[in-house]
Length: 219
Image (cartoon, rainbow, N blue to C red; front, top):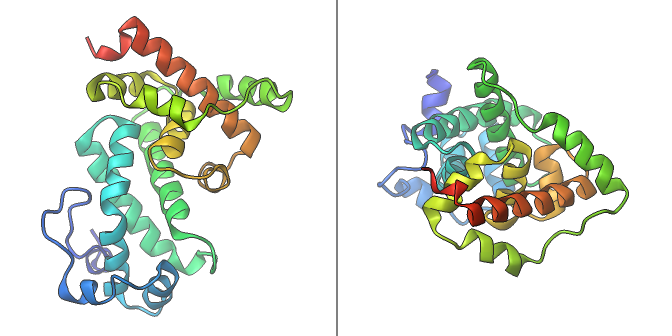
C-alpha cells in the first residue's frame, strides 16, 4: 500500500474493523460528505478517514453480496477506497459521494474478474433485456414483493444471488438492500433507468425461481 493510501485508509480493515473511529474522526463525524471531500482534497487525510469510517461497513456488506466471498470483498473494499482517494481531484463537486464510491467498488470487482480470466456473464443477455425494456415489457416489482424474496433464509438467498448474472445481481442488491433510487443506480452502473427497472424485474424473477427449485441452497 502506498504512503498516501496508508494515510487515507488509517490502517483500517474494510468492513471488519472492531475499533470505532478515532477521536478526530468522531469530532468530524457530523460533517457532510461534501465538506469532508473538500477537506480531503486540501490534503487532510483524516477527513477521508472519516468517510471510510462512514461507508466501510455498508460497502463491505454490499461487496459480500456481490461477490459471495468475504475475503475478496474485504480486498475489493480496500482497493475501492484507495482508488476513491486517488480519484478525489476528479470528483464532480456537488455530486453524491456514495453512488460514486459504489461505482468505483463495482468497477474494481469487474476488473478483478477480468484479471482472473473468469468468464463474464450477463452481457449479451442484458442487451436483449434492455431492448425488451424499451418496449415497456416489464414494471419494477413493489418493494414489499422484493422483501418477501430477500427475507427468506439468508444462506439460500446468498447462494441464489451468486447464481445471477452480475448485471441482475448488482441491480437487485443496490435497489432493495442498499435502498438506492433508480437515478442513483444509473449513476453507479452507467445504465438507463428503464434498463435498470428491467434488470430488477428479471433479477427478482430469477431469484424466485432459484429459491423455489432449491438451487439457491448451495448444495
